Image 1 (cartoon, helix red, strand yellow):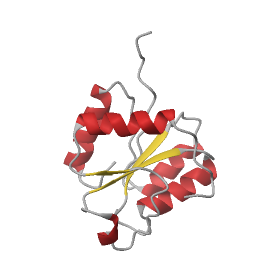
Image 2 (cartoon, helix red, strand yellow; image 1 turned 135 degrees about the vertical axis):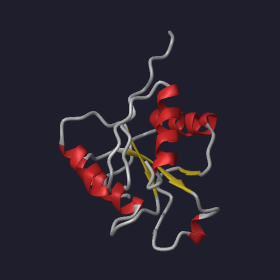
Image 3 (cartoon, one colour; image 1 turned 120 degrees about the horizontal axis):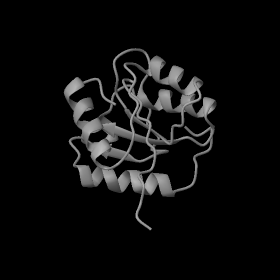
Image 4 (cartoon, helix red, strand yellow; image 1 turned 90 degrees about the vertical axis):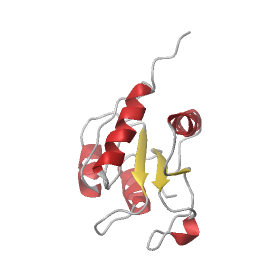
Length: 138
């Protein structure tokens, strides 16, 4: 998810190459509407700084109210969270810096999906991605 369509397309391509299924939304509000439907969403992958009134952290907080324990990964093109103006990020979820490589994306998603669910109280857009774990050879 990203407000830059080229970055969003690249991210979706990387995720699908890793075996994940994705669902994108054109805004934070649309992402929340997707979560109201009966759609499996394993991870919310959201940019921190987004156009509009809602930043990624607020999207994650509202998403977790709808889906307690929802796992989140933040993305940012800023070099550090200190420079992210208007985004009160408490790092309750991993942050991946842009530009990221496919193998970095794979690592963070693997860690998040294998880790415990996040509490609903702890915690685009431009987009939300539905990530279903890829089939793994046994």
